[in-house]
Image (tube, rainbow, N blue to C red; front, side, top):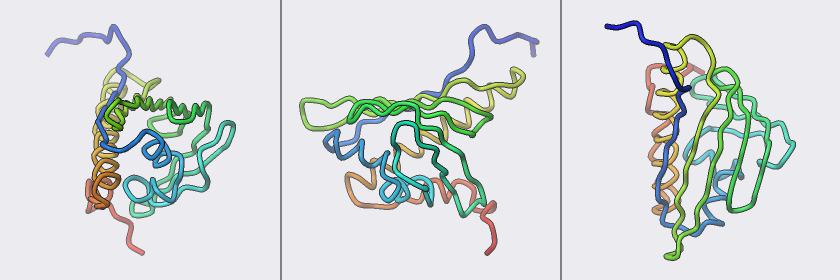
Length: 159
């Protein structure tokens, strides 16, 4: 194995078509009562510009602090969060003519040595892919797949 260096910082990007109108899909990501059906178990508040929010994954005893940077209704969300160090996450919501929504989530700004940065980007891509798949199932079919909770079943905190 060669000892090559990164020439470009890795970015995690997950994308998915969700067959619901953009307003409904956008609301699912800013409203913790809906987001908790497919991603985290508890959010301290709605996403609004300038707010500091906390997201909890109670089954893992984990949380993330979220600073909401930008909200452009039905178009874009930008946050800074405490996952993988401190990184930026951007959602882009693209309304399509057939009343569906294409969602793109990009996580960037990973820090650490090259191996750590690559691992963080891969883990983030994996996580956001599950989030989008879970959102799709919930919004289109009202099915809770429990993808995030079932990713690491042996890591669940005993209550």
